[in-house]
Image (cartoon, rainbow, N blue to C red):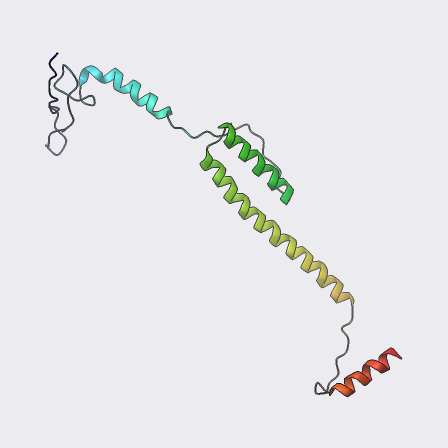
Length: 151
């Protein structure tokens, strides 16, 4: 059987240049310009639109509690397992990982601020020890003061 070499499409582009694509068998046009292929083109476009779509959770998926490190660990565990099962795209899980890292830093900062506030309350409740005015006390004077306080 003799093969016919491909011919260029007869369609011209908006700039007047030829399309340049090869024709389909039995036509003077490429797949994209052949009027008899309109239905096939539409079907290919519909199918192409669904290929490679990101796997995401359905909109009715409930929110998760994210108030503690433990909550974040549980969320990350779920995300890891969902990636393994193909339920969510690894890119989505990567975004979850990035956002949880940010959340963990915020939780840590909040914890530090809370602990600092508690320490400030404790310190304000105590009187600061009086410091000697003469900061140049020699070691013998300092030792004598310590001995006096212990007596």
